[in-house]
Amino acid sequence: MYSLFDHEALEAFRTEHKRQPYRIRQIETAIFHQWIKDIDEITTLSKDDRKLLSDTFDVIPFTCEKILEDEETTKFLFRTTDGKVIETVLMYHYHTNEDTGVIKLNRVTLCISSQVGCAVGCIFCVTGTLGLLKNLHRTEILAQVIYANNYLKQKLGKKEDGSLWSVRNVVFMGMGEPLMNYPNVKKVCEFLSSEYYFGLSSKRITVSTSGVYQGLEKFITDNLPVSLAFSLHAPNQELRAHLVPMAKFYTLDKLMELMDEYVRVSDRQVFYEYVMIRDENDTDEVAHQLGRLLRNRRGHLNLIPYNQNPAIDLHESDPEQIKRFKKIVESYDVTVTIRQNMGRKEKSACGQLGYEAAQEKLKHATSDQPKQ
Ligand code: SAH
Ligand code: SF4
Image (cartoon, rainbow, N blue to C red; front, top):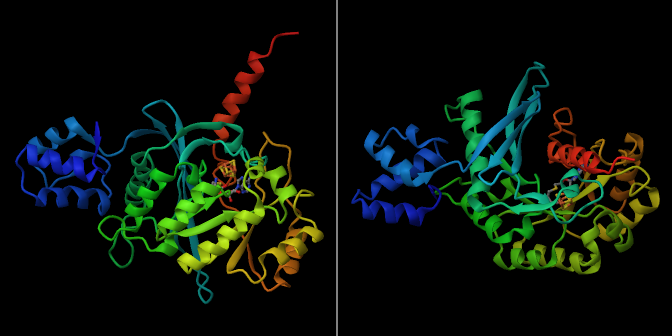
């Protein structure tokens, strides 16, 4: 099967079957502006043409197995054709009108996965406990966005201005390390930012990385029109290598040099992500070190209260300590936000993706143990 996201394949198909060039635009409009997930929904084509097309092409190369929902999030569990589970999360941001107290949905962010599992193995992340199971193909990454937009169309319909509800921000903060699947991630970023396809601005697409040196070098050279989040988690090499095992190979000094180069080349700031784990990386002393590391650098620090889960014996920092930590870093003239937690109930929060798969793995591991 070919993917309908593959413009060249579609063009070749059109030529072979002697159809008019404008047919391509019709098909791509249906996918990228009307968010159809089935070829049969392309009503601008005849029934016969739809049948012809669906013998060769598909739109969504996976099946949706489960949808878990709470007020703040929708989590999708997709099954790939080779039997792996991808998790994707919609996050709903609301706005409260201060005068009337009316709460309204303001925007929707989509958290997408670039791999199944992850090789980096951060000690605080469920996805990391799986190891790397698969790099996702660009069509499997793009289809997460189309599927989510299709879902929003069904669930929310049109906004007050008459346009369809759709994802406003896309973040590569689901499963996997995007810069270890760079060619596919690059292609997806190009689709997302292209006016012809999704038309999202650079502020609305964020690639988050734990700091993969070679991947970052390419990312900077290509100067993709997207924002960069660097999952820092520690202000010194020793603590970082403890939390992010792969950091042993990519030293912090070198990575910070790359961050400076990124700012120079892209003229954008870096979003530093910092998971707050009790007694691991949340002391006053560490906050001072972090302040010294980030002062005079163009960036913004997000403190993320650690999302706990039963598979890992770590704890969320005390909320008072997070506030104290923030104040200390701010005293170095660094801008800091404490990220609100979303989706903890449905295990849809950062670092909780892969939860289902990790539970399965744990069950098998225990049942495989020889009986005493
Ligand atoms: N691999 C990339 C992107 C996916 S992880 C990266 O590490 O940046 C997305 C974000 O979730 C990262 O900032 C990561 O540090 C954070 N995260 C992972 N586990 C978490 C947990 N248990 N609680 C809170 N945030 C977590
Ligand atoms: Fe991989 Fe990111 Fe999880 Fe670390 S935090 S294991 S890099 S997905």
